[in-house]
Image 1 (spheres, rainbow, N blue to C red):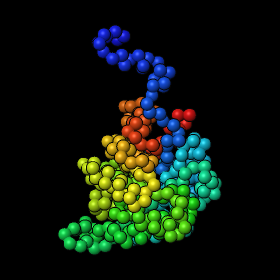
Image 2 (image 1 turned 90 degrees about the vertical axis):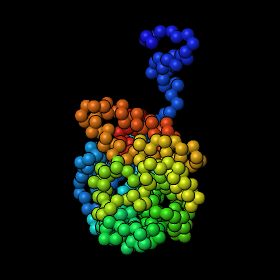
Image 3 (image 1 turned 120 degrees about the horizontal axis):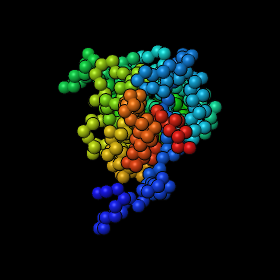
Length: 340
Ligand SMILES: [Zn+2]
């Protein structure tokens, strides 16, 4: 077909694409600063922020640099922050996760005092940044046929739930508006809800990382959060990438246990899952554009292989188009500035 030709009998789709204004008028998916949430890392005892080599533009924050970044995020108009803490001392049970003076809880107190309710302060709820073995729960010797790779150790589901409930209460006490369990233990939402309720935090919502896949795209995050497993991997508790129906079961289970909102992670390689989950539920759906997705675009842009701004906005739009109401992305503040 030639440019601009008239084609009798064909739909005239190009009529509605002819100018930027026409395309803006007909856009089915819009992206706004309020659709975005910024994940942040705060590390104990840092004086200055430390750049993360594999995630250009992203840092491990000191408490002071985090407060500054939080103000900038609020000014940019994004909806919230997702906090990850990196303690100076790690142990087998992740004690610093629920210590009142643990880094993430101190950061939550400061941000809540600074910002009040201006941003939704979400606390990632897991143990992997806090355990010396880097797994998301406490360990036990393997029973039966399963042979762990760490001298026969495996993550023990139910004792981990007790730890999660305690961490949830500590985070809510410190000022988290939302707790976001990401460990993929069975029964974690029910245990956390019960823990929050019995401590009086009946109004604290749970954003469940309901469909979290054992993904190769988490690589840079492990540098950022210093939480790489010291043996084995997370395939026995995170979801297997070939599975889709299972995501719907995980989401249904989390909602039945009391989750208020659900998340799919990663985002771009799992847009089909985002779409199916968004169709299936009537609660808010988030998608997490993970470190490897971010790094992939940054690396290609640094080589001049893609137009950085265009590629970033296209990925965010695609995640929204698939059905996510909100997107967690390391580029949230910069993207929000572009969108204003
Ligand atoms: Zn974890």
